Image (cartoon, rainbow, N blue to C red; front, side):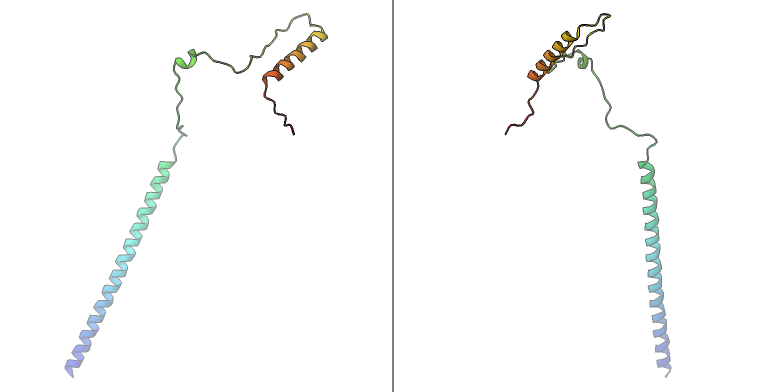
Length: 117
C-alpha cells in the first residue's frame, strides 16, 4: 500500500517536473521571440535613419573639360538670320518676296511628311 502511495507521489512529482519544464520552455521561446522582434524594430529604425538624407544628393556630377568648348560645331541646317531693325522700313513687296523665298528655301531642306496614297 505504501508502495502504491509512494509510486503515485513519484508520478505526480515527475509530472509536475515535466509541466514545469514545458512552461519554462514556453517562457524561453517567448523571450527569444520578443528579443528578435526588438532587434528587428531597432534595425528598421536605424535603416530609416540612414535612408533619410538631410539634403538630396545627385548621382551624377557634371564635369567639363576645355576640349568641350574648343571643338567646332557643325549645324544640320542653315542658321537663322536676324535682321537689325532700321529706321526706314523696307517696302511690303520686298518683305513678302523675301518671306516667300525663305519659305521655299526651308521647304527644300525639310523632310516631306505628307502621306501619298
